[in-house]
Length: 125
Image (cartoon, rainbow, N blue to C red; front, side, top):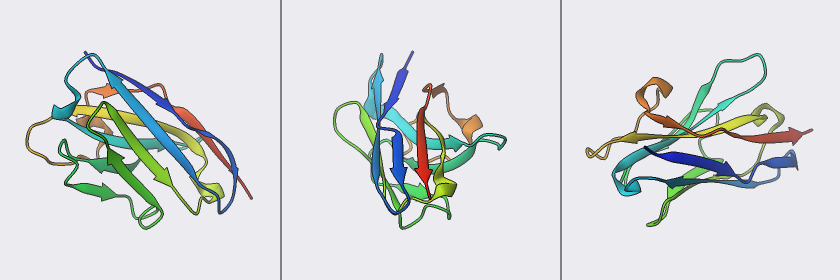
């Protein structure tokens, strides 16, 4: 079993930055592909960014490409650096984990095995 806890959300003005963290516990974290998803009120959950277990492969949604960066450390934490934030980025952000040894990334929330509770990001105009 893997437990995921997100942190780092908050209120920021448009153009500002935030760094989200996702701390994993419970199992060996290094063999898991990780992803970030977000859900705004009244909208479906959408893919944001993903990273393979080694950190060598990453992938981004077009809406955040060039502004967000996903990374992971050698401990049990995955990060989402968010720059040039826009009001449309307002949502609850969730991290997700999938047991994986291939090094691939995954963009569909149904491909993940574990989810965190989420952290709220609000961008004011």
